[in-house]
Amino acid sequence: DDDSISSDESNQERDLRKLDMDLLNATVLSEKEVSAEECVRWALVEFGEKLVMSTSFGMQSAVLLHMATKVAPNIPVIWIDTGYLHKETYHFAEHLNRRLSLNLKVYQSDVSAARMEALHGQLWDRDDDDFHRAYGVLRKVEPMARALRELGAEAMISGVRGAQTKHRAGLKRITLNSAQKHYRIHPLLHWTQEDVENYLAKHNLPYHPLKRKGYVSIGDKHSTKPLTMSPNTSTKSEASNRNTRFNGKQQECGLHTEKSNVAELNAVLS
Image (cartoon, rainbow, N blue to C red):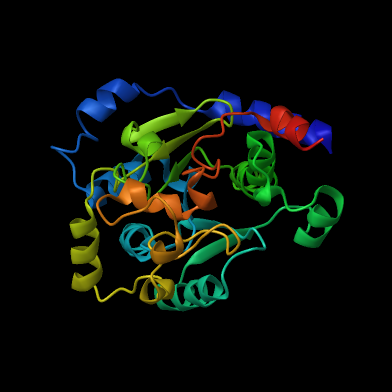
């Protein structure tokens, strides 16, 4: 109920430790001083059982899943299933789950895809930014906020890289989502595409199977296209490749940009 949510939030706020993120980003989490794996190890020591990680089972997700579970085999892995993923994504998830013995925590919207479409239509297909945001909040952001709350997470490891979008290029190794009361750690933030390819090859890890069909970025099936079918894209930059998402109108779905708290998220959906 609403009272339990408020109580959970206040407890999480009290427990969230204060960190000097500027100092951490300049020293122990500096790209020059600390490797991606060392960044994961630091996060495990700092946050212990309150550390989780997220995955989309996207194009390069095997990298961080492999790296993190080597360091913390039982780390909770949050996967937000929107109900609109490619069938290849579900098979890819099953393969990595078995191979890496993941402690997988699958979260979904409380509103089914069919119910959402019946009540609100195909929100992803509207030009209005408010509908795009509502879709992201309903299918992704709210389930993630609920996952973090239910798992008692104080910090979450994410596989974003700076080369992927303009927003991600401005991130640091550790950031604070003050509205949703958790830190985010980005071990791969400064990695290049070559770094990713080298790691996958070294550990015999797979790309998402849709790479073979010309996809360069993987999201929901209705909002992701192969590179050859997408306008205003090229292979010159990863940020440009993100234009294969949402018909080139958006590069982010909200999971990494939405700063609203639980009450504000509920207001978006009302």
